[in-house]
Image 1 (spheres, rainbow, N blue to C red):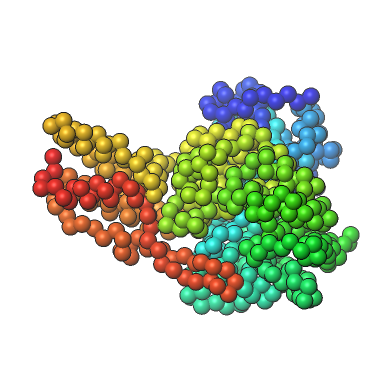
Image 2: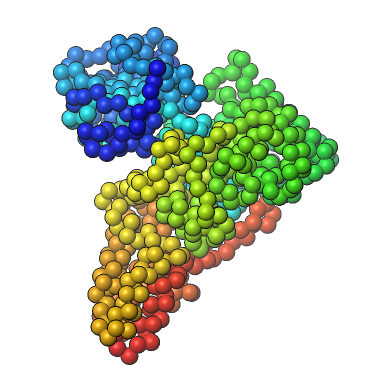
Length: 632
């Protein structure tokens, strides 16, 4: 029987620091080092994508990966297999006398990773419940190798996910992500064991306004700038999704047509669009009917459910027949209904609405945002809807979405973000044991690279909710997103990227004013802080010219906010140094502008906005300093 021990992280004697935090680490004693060549031996149940990922992980750590069927004496091996296969990896787990109870648990992506030493030589076995679970094990191995390839502590990881589908929903109102950002997010998700990306960009006209038309083959430079995608770009996106084992779910938004009895051809039109998207590599679909009004007529409720059931049946008949190729099959539908926030109606109407959807195939994923649009996932809301629906629920979490606060960024730890986001209840808490939830995907900010910080947190929480530690997770997220070399700089400026900057600089400003009142003026601590922040801005600005595409994309996201902080702190420093600079223009300056889209369908509009970091205390300080005859 597998006994759950405390999760080990930290120093070599305690174990490995891995995110998402593994369910269980058992240190075996001893150390092992990898030889320069590693034999990768995969059982027949392991697919080519997982093999390719194994080669990538080893190669990126300076190891020559050789895919073979036999081990080389004296060389390291990586065995990949499926539990119960009686293949080489399966047999090795038996030979090592490791506990297999993990595979009997009612969890997801269950796997065992074992690193052992044979005469000091490292040998790794990853055994998953299937090839996707083994793929998750490679994410742990990747992070283990980040500390080096020599003298690694021997360990066995027993690991699994608490929630089946984990990831992101691009469902905000704003400029859709570029293909480059989307693909970069896929690679980030693979590293941290996320498997779900639902595409439902509100301002993509081929998701909503032209929902039944194929994507164009060419677009203008202006269209490219505001997030349009071509068929070629979509095909490129799906190819990277497959290579990272991220289920890219393309969602259609037929709006009111889905529940209109007069629209007798709506399913034909949807299937024609799905056919087009399937040819571009999409292998899972969603249907959105959100934000078009909530029906109450029983006949319309039945029509929605019948259409949904019929659509799933059509998908199965088209792509999921017994003789279909595995690479062509399509996974079950994801459905975002009109009533996704159940407090919009009374309990009786809410029950009627979700009970009507309970008649649809059980494999469908039905989404809610909870009691309210901005609710944090919680057991009370889940229990209510699960009871009405008759099965587990999927959660569209509007976090750290900034489409209602587009000039603000939410890049702090989870609870600070809750405090900063206007629409989220600041008293919300993270449930340690979430129940009745099969999918948790977050709706991010328009800034996809900055959203990685929150995405990292959700990856950790949805994998191992019991072990989630708010602040430790944020510290690790910063390193994961900007790297060790820039982590301290970003942690320094992150509180200033917030609109609410009192926590960042307020205390030092207050102490400065108190020193003046006490006739012993001293601005040393405040000036030191301003200089540190300004220097940190310069470090992050260097990402613009990084060799890493992720760094360059990150800089592009943060640029308007970063430059404004840089300029404000530089002006304050100059004032303290007696240089008497002119007041900066912080309200109408192109350096701090960015574009956003509003609306959906036929009502999409482009607007230019100004970033608002540090909007409380820093502007107030600058104004006060300019009003002084001399700075004391």
